[in-house]
Amino acid sequence: MALFIKVSMIMIVCVSFLYQPVWASIDPEKGIDKRYRVVGDNTYPPLVFINNKGQQDGYDIDFFSLLEAQTSSRITIDLMEWYEAEKEMKTGKADILIGVVKTPQGEKKWDFTEPYLETRTVIFVSKSNFIIKGVEDLTNRRVGVQRDDVIESLLATNIPSEPIQYTNQKAALIALAEGRVDAVVGDYFTGMYWINQ
Image 1 (cartoon, rainbow, N blue to C red):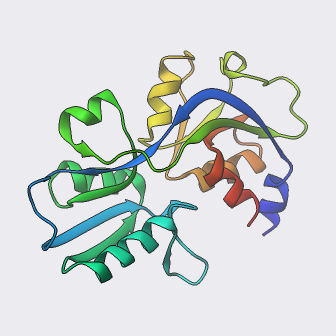
Image 2 (image 1 turned 90 degrees about the vertical axis):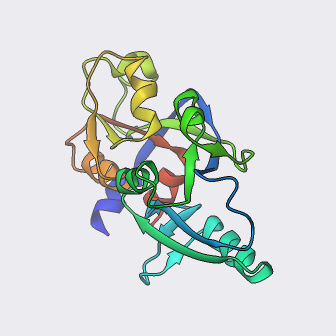
């Protein structure tokens, strides 16, 4: 808890990226009355995450529970680190990937739903940081990001510095609270969830 008290002293500076989570599916012809394996990030609140009781939680979990109850489909949801979920989808071991951001590269591989949430990417900095006010200030700074997240590619086109990868946004925010990074670039809703825990 002490780490999150430090993290709660974080100021948010908006970045000009907006993205919309969607679901990606490999096989659109599978039909409604089949078995589906759904995978997603285990630390992507409020959409999908493991809560403090060790249970799967979030809007997407609720949706798939309702979908299973209303159809004859059998749905299994497995939550894991994001890079693992993406790998499961890429290798055909999963049918649906929760919370993926639609990109031109992704559209070549997968079919996407319509966007169901508009969120924004922000820069989290410590409250005492008066230097970083926008993307241009991230050059030559220690910037934490979630490994294999779409934010990594967005940063690559906007700043020359190599970001420091963490398994999830929560771990990156802990690094910020401990002073191991100067900023974290991540999802607004997810970051605020972890800061307020």
